[in-house]
Image (tube, rainbow over all chains, first blue to last red):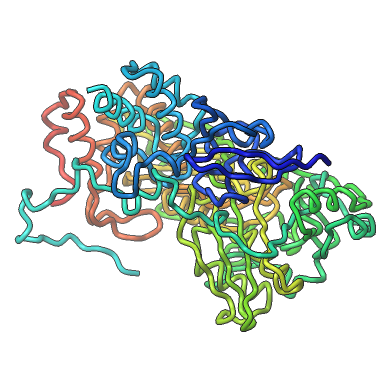
Length: 158
Length: 452
């Protein structure tokens, strides 16, 4: 099987990883780089838990061949907060609204929210619902998640 | 059993309570939103091996032969586990509190009883190698007649599908959990109207976002670190000790972080084989369900069927209830027998009915096993009971609010399973609900109270 070393900038750090043709970006994040905040919920593009941004575009890392990330930048949940004591407004809003119960979907939810607010600073409620439509939550329910994202949008665009 | 009595706390004023209606920050939520939360699958181990099950394509079949040679020749194959490798290959979760019979194989032996039951565990260097090796195991089956419907399974000519020889879970040697309270036939004779109805509920999958799984790491001192996302950490430690014949002090369970459970991670499933695999290979073993296995193999909420016959007076008082219920526990009972007992205690619902007769069955079929899920036993019973209340209300032309309030149980009432009702509050909850949605109850209903 084809093996190749790729160069990928992950959360602002350039990393070199040797991958096979069928290695997914999800496996590189979790197994090679230890970024286990990228969750493996279904490994078939059904739940959104593994969402990352590739060159700013939201992607399911479980469906992305790692080789496609060669030479590109990837942002994961671990890169969203400036520091552990300086969380992103989306993360602070999730905490305030109790938008996370078991926590498994939260990484993907925050990434989808960030991808939305990066391009649409003043989204409508429908925009937010659409933006997280690829993310499944099984315990919190979606209302508090949508509330949190709208509040973060207000803070970021103020 | 401890029951909370009605107690006054004079030092507590309404102003001293602040939790209800106010946000309370979830403990550890910062880890949830930053990706720092460490779940079971997030722990890394040197030399980690991967376990995949060979599963039955048949609902019910005799295992004629199994040939592992193709798997053994697959690059990356380490070891297979079959029934003979499991020291105590028959359990039931509630054996820990003396309830039996034991009915479930950890690995199928001679017979498979549901589609997807595991016949062999393949341990390999990579998930891909494990899957490839598992695909090369050759099994010869002789298909047996299967049964899926609860009432079909209890017929005299139904195929017997359990090891203990009955298609029902025995309750103190009876074929069902029974309630006999008052004289139900006399109650029907006194009734003005008889309301009979059948209710069915389907099985439900929990769908946790995190699939069920375990990683077991053997340690240099001969113990085992068991990383698991089970909801029943100590419960499963005790069962694992029995199944694997390893003393409990050698098993160190690490968990408590569960990416959604809802009852689906109460039964031990992946723990036993991860521990045995680590014991027999000396390597860390990871056994996680795929999403497909989570949906098709893991336990579900049981599907239920109820037949309810109620005798009702024209003013709405329910004077007799006869209920026959069936829970479909699938091929192995797990915790459904407990749900059936809870359901039996809930036959009158939160209402006082003077004459009650109930037969509640826990029935084996060739479905995937059912088990715990959020209020199991009571939840499905409530669906049937409350649907029945609305049908009664419509049939006799009584307001459904009135029907519920005049039948509501009160402190001191004797329930059908002979426990005195305490701390009841159905009347007050309904009154508050009506007020909250702007429904003005008649004065005689506003005056009702649950306690003297």
